[in-house]
Image 1 (tube, rainbow, N blue to C red):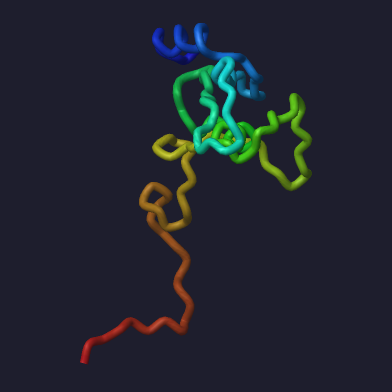
Image 2 (cartoon, helix red, strand yellow; image 1 turned 30 degrees about the vertical axis):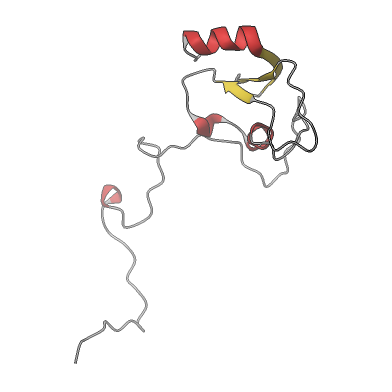
Length: 123
């Protein structure tokens, strides 16, 4: 469990388990928190990450539930379209991060710009 002792204690006392995603992250909501329809307050929802706290490890379906975009829990088995790529966490700052052609860590060489480019010259 990737949570502090305080978060684990709070979860045990005040949380109700609602589901788990394909990465092993576990999702909770406040136990017995009835929210009235005319109230601006939302029920409290949170995630206990399987391996370290990193918000980009939350799949889109669970992100929507956590942020009250939807009240429906994601299904156990999520049907993916053929064109959908599997969820990946943010890789910025890692060796697997995306680096476009011309990036200094990719050799610094980029394709020549089009022939219609003229730099601005002050008069």
